[in-house]
Structures are given as C-alpha cells and as structure tokens.
Length: 367
Ligand SMILES: Cc1ncc(COP(=O)(O)O)c(C=O)c1O
Image 1 (cartoon, rainbow, N blue to C red):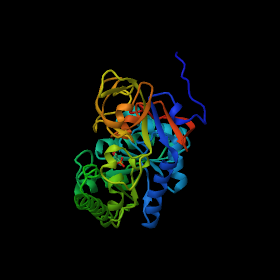
Image 2 (image 1 turned 30 degrees about the horizontal axis):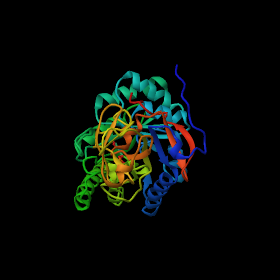
Image 3 (image 1 turned 135 degrees about the horizontal axis):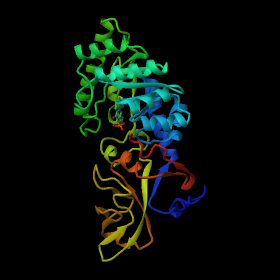
Image 4 (image 1 turned 60 degrees about the vertical axis):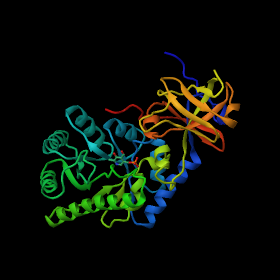
C-alpha cells in the first residue's frame, strides 16, 4: 500500500503538490449563506444536493446556515452522510432492487430517510422491506416536469402512485418532487424563467390535484442552482434542491454570477517543449471534460486546448509565454461534480493557506 502524504495546515496554496482540488472556504461559505438568505427572505426551504460536494463537512455547513435537510443521489452517498452525522436526507432518485433497499432500511434506523419513486413495483418492494424491518421511510412521487428523465406524468399516474404509497405499510407519503434539469443551465434568462416557471407550476398543480383527492402533500421539492430564484418564487414550492451553487463551476459561471467560483484545480507546468506550448500535469484523470475544457484562471494568453490522460496542453501567447517548468497555475473545471469525484481530498484553503485536507468520503459512491 503506497503512502499518501498530506500537507499540513498553514501550507501556502502555491506550495501544495499537484494536481490539487482547491476550495476557497470563504467563497464556499458565502455561497451557502447567499442561497440561504435568499430562501429565508422568500420563505423557502433549502435542501441542498450533496451530490456536488459528497462530503459531510459541507453538508453540516449548509445545515448550520439553515438548510432543512440534504439531498443525495445514491444510497452510497446517503451512507456517508449518515455516518457523518446528517439526520435528514432525501434521496432525490429511485432506489431499486433488494440490495440497495436493504441498505436504505439500515439507514432509516439512524436518520429520517425519504426516497423518490416513479413506479408501482418499486413502491411494493420498498413497502415489503419496510414492513420486514419494522422501519418507516418517507416516499415522494417524482413527477416529470419536462426533463424527460425519471418521473411520472402529473394527474392520474401521480395520483395512482400517491394512493398506493398511502396504503402501503411502512411507507409515509410525504409529497412530490420534480427536477427541471433541462433548463437549469439555459443561458438565456427569459427562456430559463419561462420554462422553469412552467415546470414548477406543473409540479404545484400536481400537488394541488393530490390534495383535492384527499392526499395530504407536505413536500413540493424542485430546482437546481440556475433556477433557484425562478422556481423558488413559484407559490406552492416548499424547498430547493440546488447543489452546484456551493462551489460553482465554469459551466454555471456562464449562466450567471449569482454565486462565485470556489473550486479550482491547481496544476504544475511540467514541460515547455516549444514556443507557444505549455504542458501541465492535469489530464482527464484530474479534471473532467464532459462539459468542455477547463479554463486557465488569471493568466492572459493561456488557453487549454487539449487534455490526454495525465497531461493538459496549453496554447500560450503574450504574457503567458513567461510560464516556465515548475510554475503552478489554476484551472477552472467546466463541471465541478464530475471533477470532484476524481479526488480523494479537498485542499480547503483560507486566505491563501491550507486550512485542512478534507476527505471526499462520498467520492466514487455511485452504488
Ligand atoms: C434531482 C436533482 N435535484 C437537484 C439537482 C441540483 O442541480 P444543480 O447542481 O444544478 O444545482 C440535481 C442535479 O443533477 C438533480 O439531479
């Protein structure tokens, strides 16, 4: 087993070994507080999605600021959060099959667990497992509000599932969720407003329809970072599931600047083979490229033009020609969540110095 050498608190950021996933803690905390204050003013709950940070430390910061609970995408993520002391979790996704459901029931012994469903057979297997273990879990119906991923249609299909949940032993019907993922990163504000409002109204109408049918609906949960202040102003929505806002990434920074960039990858220039080209130690094993190539931060004339497994190829012109082997530079990933998933630790930095190396305990836990 090889050693892992972790730097000590107080280490200046530019002395960290690379590639390093650097979090500016003051910026992350400001983002947490900004969303929470907006939500408080608008009497809206915040249920941040932990799929972004995958780490109890940040979940606790969100809860301390006033979040009503957190969302997870997978049972594996929820296990990490419960082990880290989080007690209110919505798995905003389907949990299917006996293995995962057994783990879900184990978690329900230590935390209030709610899960999304969109299928009758899944409701039945959840109910059987809850009855067998004598535990209760919350269940919400996922409604397809236009993303066309998971979710049932509003109206009769939603009513049918909600009724089944209500009559199923071991299950507590909590409400509905919908995720307008097809519009959260839409660059055009007017388009984002129109489409996110339509999605939110579809969800609120589905909830009202259930109430008319005599089914009490407590939770009407929706939104991502790019729609927090659109979905969050639609009457009837109860809480927001934003995730990326905590760190922001290059993609979301092209949508808006409501939150600031807290996450960069520190890289080292390892080669200057010819004029006009610099090569870093950050390839696709250090930065994801599913939403495009990373951007060089703060160096005029330096542009990432390609990544291979362990190398980043930069075009350098003008002032950037001064870059030399051994220099450290910062890269902004276009997609934070998938980049974070590549690292074992965050280098959490305050005022340019390392505060702590924090384990990304939920990293890789996609089961
Ligand atoms: C169900 C659900 N809710 C909320 C979010 C949070 O979105 P964002 O990272 O855009 O804030 C996601 C993101 O994929 C999601 O899948």
